[in-house]
Length: 237
Image (cartoon, rainbow, N blue to C red):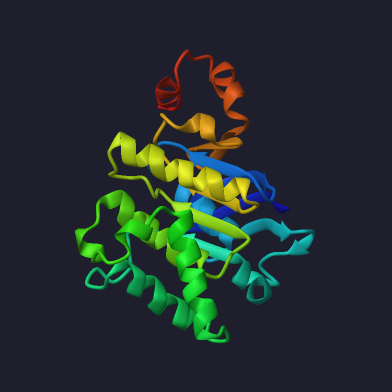
């Protein structure tokens, strides 16, 4: 279990995150929502340890996450907002190259099997010979996710992975994340898309750096006293 208590982030004399609590378990998919500038990405980076909080504590299975970061690092997969996979390579080669870098101790046959497994999970097998530059936005993002899944991370963090995708691609990618959670991964995603919130186990809403809601999707409309998910942002404005 990943637990955060009273996370606070201060930068340049400004408080970006203030006293936020958070909890996630293996097999859960949690969405972090909030208006632009609310602290979503800051919270995500504090939770995954890449940019630790100024104050507060993060633990994984009761152990201090920051103090043991080097030990836990292999359990973390991180998909940034911008795709960083080489666009000139074909999908299979991109994943194969990443596997060589990340899994040097595996035998070549085992790395090939891992690449094939990841492509199958993410629905990329039919596109394995396509250059990344020729893929749709949603497929490129799946390749980015695939690179992280090669090492079978316990936790997958993704920063606005569906940003800029059309509704169909957004839904498809979110369903992929749902399947990963169902397979036992802990999936934590920042998003501003409201149409697929029912796929998440829990939602964490931050506003102006503070926690505004944390709980299951079926409680969020009642909490904010709205009839539609999209109206939440009007309440937070």
